[in-house]
Length: 109
Image 1 (spheres, one colour):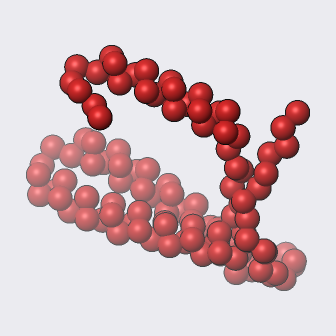
Image 2 (cartoon, rainbow, N blue to C red; image 1 turned 180 degrees about the horizontal axis):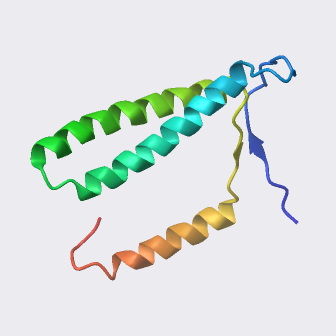
């Protein structure tokens, strides 16, 4: 049985009280930004007006950058952990998508 390894920085301590702490606030903001980028993505896919599309694309990029900065802050402070993928799963996924290339109507390098 393989043990999943966590990729995480040392956790910055925050008060454990009923009141929201810094971690809670940043996590709330990160969740909101993730929701907003998903919503802007849908709006971009359905925008029929080019000017609106350009404005939405600019806002989407700003929102995505904000989301990334919040993620980096959470990760830096040890408040966001990732699971290290097993090499076998990475190799399987790589082979799966390499096989898909042969099904495309154009040559992919």
